[in-house]
Length: 307
Ligand SMILES: Nc1ncnc2c1ncn2[C@@H]1O[C@H](COP(=O)(O)OP(=O)(O)OP(=O)(O)O)[C@@H](O)[C@H]1O
Image (tube, rainbow, N blue to C red):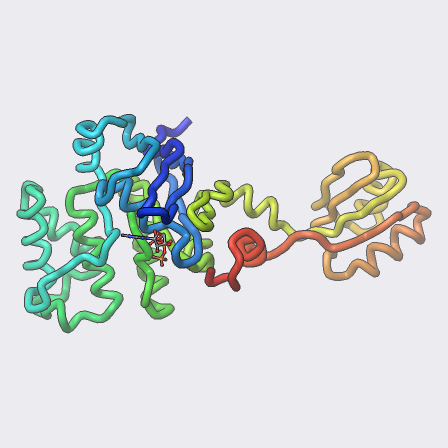
């Protein structure tokens, strides 16, 4: 069992009468890339701000690396790196000089960390180029470099892909995967665009109007979204013989004595139906089930895939 890195217990944040985060319970284990998904105003930033200590919870508890007390949390937050509010860099300084400032400000020992961070994010060759002349993607990557300077065990990223073009998105995605796999960094990353996270997240939390409406692993989502042909039959056992011998399919699942899910020939149900009927199978119904990840997401949080 992997270690629990972060857990929230009934976390609440109210701004006056506005309930921004409502009794949220998330759990992130070591090695996870946790995608926090929700429309604008769902409460993502507020939740991440409470985790990083930028704002205090109204109620509830945060458990980070096993610590729950204020002093304990302050201590273990040193093991995290975050981009929650747009990091402010000096426009007239280079990438290296900006990171040097961050290093000193945070009391991180040793200059090697700067070279390593620049290399990891692919900004080693930017020389004297000033921050103000960086592309959006370079700026985001410098933000990540600043966040990983202290060799964090947990990265907390609020919409780091916002405003990037498709190439920039791919670059950041690959970088995050690299940090996760090679440096063993656990990541929580928010977005209002499911597609941005769907290729990297190992676990998802769906937020809507401050509520965590569902939390599930990418495997569970795939399982739920997997397309198949649902066959209601009189005798599933007999049907499975015909599926294997006459249709030459092996990817199917007998759900119960009257139902089979066929994961092949999904888009040619007429072939399946004819073969079953020709082989004296009593078939009550055959229909396609399953949905795209986008549809699954839209059903839960509304919107059009870009929540
Ligand atoms: N400082 C604040 N004062 C008052 N209300 C706030 C404050 N910060 C956030 N809110 C409100 O709390 C709710 C959640 O906002 P939050 O920024 O956490 O959402 P979000 O999911 O991060 O959205 P976005 O993607 O737009 O950043 C919103 O209704 C927002 O208006």
